[in-house]
Amino acid sequence: MLRSTLFRPQFTLRATFFFVTFIVAILAAYRYGYHEGRRIGPVIPSTFSSHLIYPREYDVRDLVGTGNSVEPRNLSALIDNVSSSVAPSTWDFVGGYATIVPGKSQTSLVVDQTSSGHAEVIKHLTDIRDEIEGDYLGTPFAVVLRIVSDRRNTLTGDVDR
Image (cartoon, rainbow, N blue to C red; front, side, top):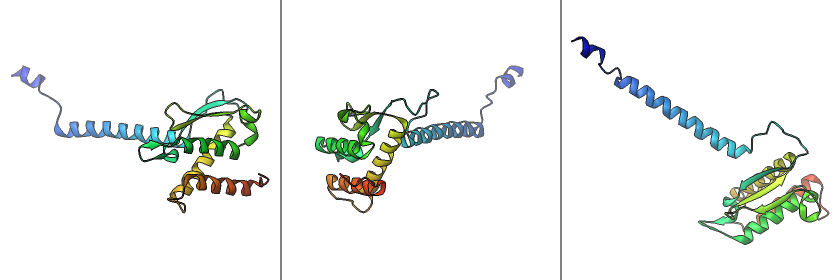
């Protein structure tokens, strides 16, 4: 008799429910943090300097693709648009230090830029996404890029282009 009371299982239905709820909460918090981290950008490194060049890959599948395919002309148009709209004098093809190239999967942009340059790239890509999802739904991609660039140039006073 003594032996059966010592080895009686202690897991009740209530304990199992709380354990599963705890695990689900941890996984949900991880997923939320992962998606928020991708949305807001990279974590600032401890060796942060506003003068250093940092690499970052931007997922632009939603901007350059149509359904399940990617249109290379949209990717090259996006690269041209970002490089002419965001800190135009900093890119390597005009003698600057920053680079922008397509990612391996052709659905991303790999940008080497300063932290302030990355902030501008994030803002510019967000503006393009907002225009596509807003008033210009269904408008050709090149037209949306031109609208966003013109609006950005008007706001910054850079209208000589």
